[in-house]
Length: 116
Image 1 (tube, rainbow, N blue to C red):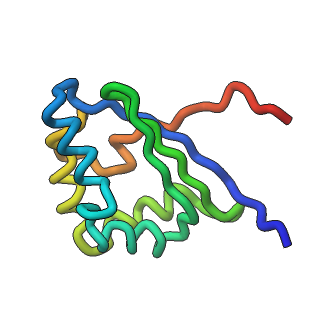
Image 2 (cartoon, helix red, strand yellow):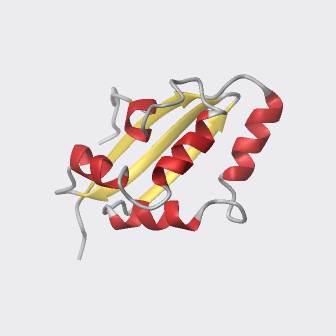
């Protein structure tokens, strides 16, 4: 059985400082990623999440069930354990308002091509 999904793609820039970028990479490694954050991502219904980096540009790809509501899920995610602490921690690496929520930091991208 094939399950229909939705895909969201977002982008954000890190501060263009090699030492900070290296620390941001480590913070997202299997060894250092906070388990509460991974659990929260799954709890709100996200099926898969990947983050790619090129220089200081990040691209995040998020796959969800077809009936997923992004706004509701992000509002719920913001209330889960350690989420606010995580956002405050990673803000030191990001080119954004340090008090912004995850949903405010990441900018949704528009798909302009799809190979059918």
